Image 1 (cartoon, rainbow, N blue to C red):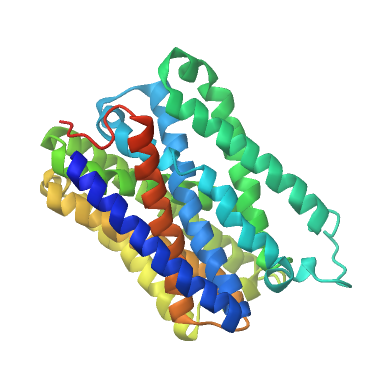
Image 2 (cartoon, rainbow, N blue to C red):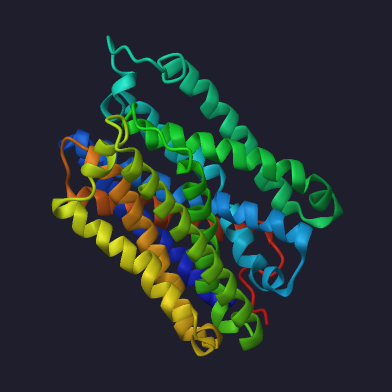
Length: 348
């Protein structure tokens, strides 16, 4: 990405973020219940970008490979947005009783020892400390990064798994899935790779684009497998604590959204990425990656919004603009002010 392009993208990111924040603020005032769930969906989708970028930077420090060298500037861009996760979590914290049954006074649960506001807050602080520390390690690079990568990756995986359980799975306190965290982690990695490809594909040689396309295909297939395994386990067990979660999402409007995710998040990308011509084409590969970015947002809506007592499409879109636009603008600004090598400059 050239310096001029980065400046334009930063400006448009701030504009989109400002428009989204205004719309989200109006939603908070006018339809507070719809805002709470719309913001949570946008927050859960956005979090995958910086945290997935951090994880991929750490993985590449251990494995090497030209794919990581090609998209490192774009991954660093995502990692620089990690502090925003703490800021974007504030509306979630302020709307806890609206979002989670276990956060309401007088609600007793069998797993109340875990799902309670005090313990939730303690875990949240731990998550944020680990994530910001991991981002500092990943952006720093060098031999120190390679030495710290194994432990940092383990901490990142554990905290991200529990954060996924806390923020979205606990919307239905009785729902249990041992695969849920792995689906969320794979989705974060997939989102980070997809965003990096959208940024880097135009200036990346065809041979390296081919490598990136194969990585994108592999992560898409892994996500599809894990997501299907979760559905299969719930369907086979047919337990009253699990089945209602899918029943809310498999019929009516949300059933159509579920089909859209199956097609746009799995079938189409996998079928297209099988072809070397698609993987080597800058425009085609970036198009598939952009589709996956959009589908990750749709998937977050499908996960969160069926639990909402009230919904507003305009508020949901405003929340996505708020976190996505502000996140992009902030990351580009950080990359420019910190003069991160390769970010905001042309690279081959």
